[in-house]
Length: 200
Ligand code: ATP
Image 1 (cartoon, rainbow, N blue to C red):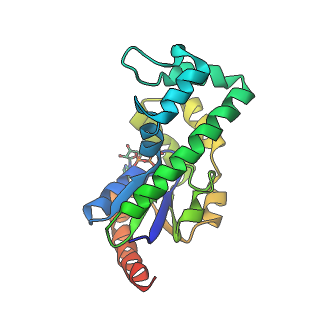
Image 2 (image 1 turned 60 degrees about the vertical axis):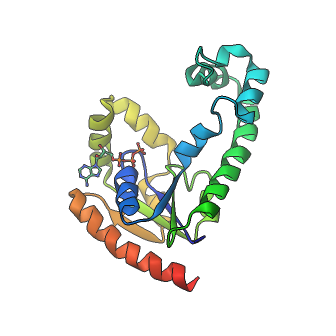
């Protein structure tokens, strides 16, 4: 089916927990982070172009992209960053769209942390936001990644605010209790999406 539900939420909001559950109900998942890694796999046109542009210093001994080296190069160089975005964004978009088209479950979920920031909602019939209070978001992310509060807060500051995200939502699930609570809400939405996809 080509009925697309965009699933988003801030760092540590529970996108993986939610998409794993929807996958267990038989729904195909397309993950923007996975696709972003796939387009720069060894042998890909994008990785070849990056190596030609920045030199072999951005390729590691295994032939993989050295993300750290690339990040260091573009960090203070807007022209380099712009060049990279113009290469990667169309490639990622094309691959995302191909995977969405290939999906054959009753509807398909596009998971993307920056769905709204990167305007990917234009490919979605519906936007589902996972909402979580900031304090809980911070706590869960720090625990999962073993990271510092400052580090997580910096990432949160680079994303839309909770209010901005909620304003753009068609549907909201609240992930402020246990996983069963999350799954109950998703079970109801799954039924709804199957109906909507049938009528579309
Ligand atoms: P990211 O944007 O960083 O990829 P995410 O949105 O995919 O994050 P998850 O990894 O699913 O978020 O959840 C963040 C952490 O919180 C994980 O360790 C997860 O196990 C935990 N978590 C998610 N939902 C719940 C819940 N309802 N109760 C307890 N822990 C939860």
